[in-house]
Image (cartoon, rainbow over all chains, first blue to last red; front, side, top):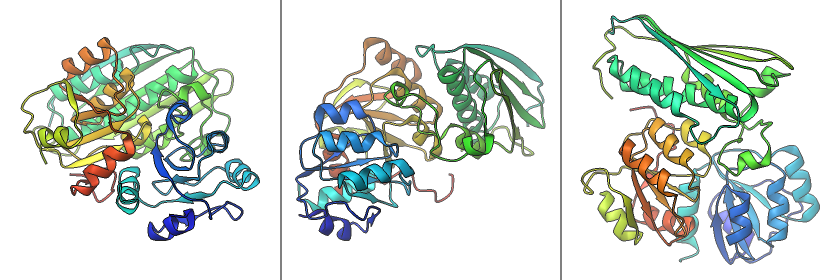
Length: 111
Length: 150
Length: 121
């Protein structure tokens, strides 16, 4: 499933304009701890988190993740969005909780 | 309604994460023992906990002073920390000055002051940059509070 | 859903038992950020799924009245944190599943979030 299709099906608001929405979502990693994502996330996974600070973009780039979903109606910091645009990392926003966003995505990816 | 007057204090050491939250936990036990409703106890405990963590994360030391009367629970948290240059900004959800290593411990998401405000009936924040911050939390007891349960 | 059933679904082991495992769980939070849990505290009988294993998690669970904590990816807290949870009567479980899979399975079983602000109980 492409990032774009996933965003549509989960009613996510795509916050970036230059993020690569054509990438395949190979899975999902949920964590709010950067060290944890660095250690355990896999390439192509979409990352669900509450964190909104600019470091999340650096981590997504380093791990070659397909995108970041920020939950609970939180908005990324201005600097975060800027970095994401520069790196082509899609940032999507969910009005739901992490549990429900992850749960819906699990169902969608038919894991 | 609790008829008791009760007060006390806890001293906090900055950077001391091993026992972080112990003061709030003890306060929670004390308030429960006074027969205050679970909802008010939880609000007081959450507000105090967030204030306690702010001291431990940002300050060198601090003190929590609590006072319970039949009308209200008052908790004053004072610290010798860096102070808050812009209190309005600090009250914004998501705004944080916590360093990265604090985020890796599960804190520093910028919800501390908003959480304190959410759980207080009245909140006063005073701060002097370079000297420290004092947060005054007030929770008003409703009539017939004791024993209402959840 | 009972905690026992949740443990079965997640293939989780009990690190701390705090009563009868047939105790009811009504909602689930999943977060590694303590203030987030405190922000939405108030729903009774809730379970937390997290990858953070420090003692702050237990402390926050105690303050926020969270009944049980499930650690993912087989992460286990140290002995002090385990006995701290036992003292406070908070269930601790560990599953080898990821947070995504754990959330996915419980969501699929009908459990919903404890972070919806539809009024305090």
